[in-house]
Image: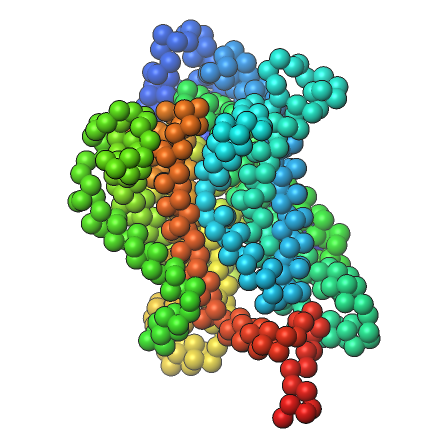
Length: 328
Length: 304
């Protein structure tokens, strides 16, 4: 349990650090931050709206420490302020609608990519030196070298615009309203297909190489030799003995890579105008909607921290060693 | 070091990587002198590739080839300098934490872990959105969000080296901490430092392109990221102007792939286990043995 306690401590520190960063960064802007930030909205927003924005940010005349305490209090009670571009909607409401789409698209694509990549990695380690081990890794590495969003543009261009096989934007057809019907579900699936494929194609190589390398190490262990010597079927040795043990270190790198993959999928959303967090992020950047940028930063960071905690829980559940002593 | 370079020369993957990389460095150095002003309006907007403009023109009638070449200079410069800076900071933090141990290590490791666990893109966006736009901002943001990766591996390596006899001997003979780190420990992780720099450069180029694609850089300055920003802004997809984004993306991928190839070869160099593994696989393949079986018989009794 010491392991879990240490990890929990890390997540708490990370959460506090991101909260504090979101507080400090706007105040590092050259000149008077509050004026510089709100000067852009003069004429666009009513004075009361600007006062409300100032208040939610804690940009008051109070000492910095008091501003910090007010800010922490606001954020921790779920008050992320008011969006500028979606005025007068609250940032928390704007983000909630986008969050579901991101979780759906990214969650689905990441799990799929991880499953396929890991299976390929098992096969590559098992058949070292064969074509799957010599051709697939460099090929997938090459594809993985393209920026996520560029792959998205290419796939969208070929399959969406030129061939017209898939929808080119949004999460569902514009004439539909969200409802529990087959037609709507089908529309959601066809719209998510291409963005999901982009994420899968871009990340599969990394998962494959990770799994292959750990699995090659495991294959050298004595218990594998013993399993062979006992005359167990190769398939059984491959999955029940080798792959099972190689999965554990693989799981930790899954947690570590999550933030990176999420960043990529946010960019993919932008290309497909998919109404998730990434799309909100670029809209916020374009309209200088600082409260929304801040809210998105906090939401995405907290989501990654939560996902990591979840991976840790699975790890502790799977590995008895993590339960009894601390594993670094 | 000499042996290392010789080994790199004989590795086919590394050779391919180095050739591609060398080509791009050459283009970045002398290319912009040959193609003229990349921002000049030369032809009709969005004209497809032709003899005058081999890569076509952008939505503003600029030559895509000239923009790609000029972009190489900016993006490679940012990529390599950010990569070096990240590893420099990583080495400072990593060796300090690993060598001193105790509470210093606890504190530094915690800081490193926090930076590792925070998703990069949102952090980059929030910082870049507030600071004045420009290449310096982008570089600073990339250094700040990426140094932790190298700090982590360098710390681990320092921990391992700290217990080696030659380090202990140096300490017993009265050498100071800084001298032990710089003269005894650092030279023994050259290949790790090189591979960390390459990894950081790949990250920096990718992240720079992503940030500028979002419009967080200086969009009037030509770089690979801003090329893609303008392609998206001028509706490259709607107008089916594939030539405005395909060259830049391919260049980014080629540089990333070349760096990954060199890195793979470096890994093998610093890791004898991987090297013997390659020899082992090659030998087994020569005999047509299935490596799933853990103890392959490579020589039958009557072979000898």
